[in-house]
Amino acid sequence: MEGCVKDFLQKKGYTVNDNALSKIQVCDDWYSNRIIEDFHKRKTLNGISYELSRLNFGKRCCSDDANLCEVLEINAGDGEQADYVAAVLDGSKFNTQYRKQLEKTSADGTTACYIRLDNATFMDDGSVQGGEIKLNYVEADAFLPLTVEDDIVIEAAFSGSALSKGKKQTTLVLFTIGEDGNYIAETHVFDDKGTEITDRKTVVQLGDVKPFAVMRNAEVNNLDDMEGYGLPKLWDAIPALKVVDLCYNVLFSDLDKSEKIILISELLCEFDENGKPKLTTEQKKLFVFTGEKLPEEKGMIQEYNPEIRVEQITKAFELALSLLSMSFGYGTKKYSFENGQITTATEYVGERQDQMQELNRQRHEAVRYIQDICRAVMWFANTFHGKSFNLEQEVLVDFDDSYITDREAELERKRNDALSFDIPKLTVWYLMDAYSLTEEEAQKLVDEKLQIDDNLDGEDED
Picture (spheres, one colour):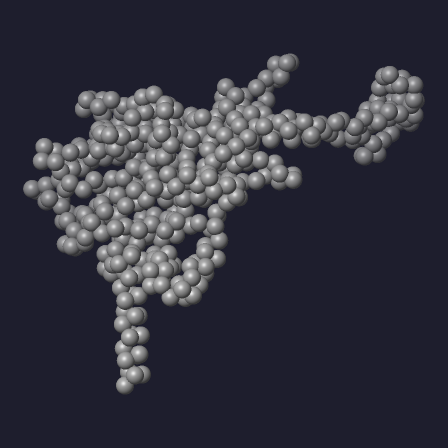
């Protein structure tokens, strides 16, 4: 969080949670594969500085985590309402940003999104007309919960930086609740020196619908002083990530020093007029001269093949990956060596359905997040664009289960059941899954089909 934002919030009486932000920063360093100064920077016994290689497994964990919550389709209602919400989501590149936020939620524990109006007209009475509805995506380090009730973020602040004419500008948006119970959006802009640009300040009166949404890791956050933030999954996995990097460096070191060398007595070598041995390029690469006598050998030539400790390193990797799997989630075999290959999270979950409980909790959190965004978009459309969308309409979210089930095979099974048993309810369920329909929409289609069949039967009898 920018210093100017922190100072501004503190002057307004808010407390910036440095403890939470510091933990989030540590986790983000591992996710981003940055150098951890007190771990990756090393010195040899002789005081020579070197740097551990980084395997970037933190990113891999979060990426595999995100695969399990990918969304196929969002249905926000019927007709114009569904099309309008879909257009806003597409215009804000929701699918791409949502995927990124899934990974960052695993890494840092929290992501958020708020609704904004671009190019709107601000009237003297504080009202707003027109404007284009956009989504603004925020990462954990730029999000500050202001009021939390029953573990739900009620009021929040969001910040972000961008370049304007080559100079840095920082924007701070606060969503607070007024005395009438409605939200107020307050925007402040700071220049590259951290000074507020007062003529850019705006205050907009909103309604009772929350204009932002927060997605958190569904695991209970057991860390102290992190109210309003989700548990960063990488926090508990950092010790295991260190072990994985160490194992990789042991393997790398063995391979790096594994080239064959040949110890040879100088008595076997021909020298030029300068006293240097005459050697081919390949001989220069392999031969090491030890004088006229070899160590511990009476022969003239001794071959040395450094050992690559494959078996020991493999066992160490297996233990490291098991520890990482256990600390990150989805069981102790999320990552493991099996028959010389690494089994990934998606393959493991497909075999162990008991691990689906954790996945279902995270999907429930993702559904709530998407529903909050869609309802906020519909409220903005009703208020500023003159629409009359139904905010109580159920928002359906269809997840991609191809990582854990064969969706086509599952749909085919449901279709065959509907055709074989001639039970209308089975047909309703099939239509709901196949076309992301609500139960009412699917039932209406089935009823229309039954009515057509009855009419055709009546004509045949005549």
